[in-house]
Image (cartoon, rainbow, N blue to C red; front, top):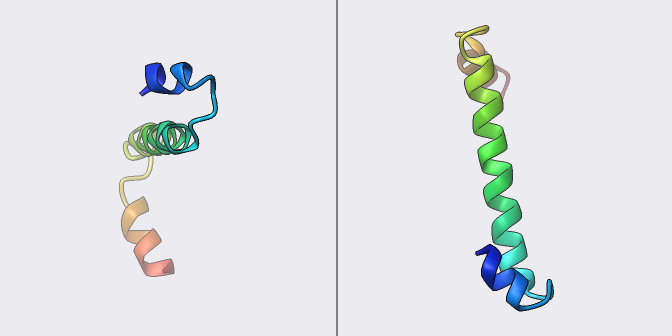
Amino acid sequence: MLVTYAQAAGKDRETCERILDHVAREGRKLIRYGRDPLQPDLEKAAHVQI
């Protein structure tokens, strides 16, 4: 994906959005995996709040 974006000189919005979406998803996973051991009931508490 980065090659496609670079070849379009940074003007390929669809690829840019896909890259940012992927980075955001991976970041959320990283935060979640880091917190889960500290707060094992976090997911259940979040569902209750929703």
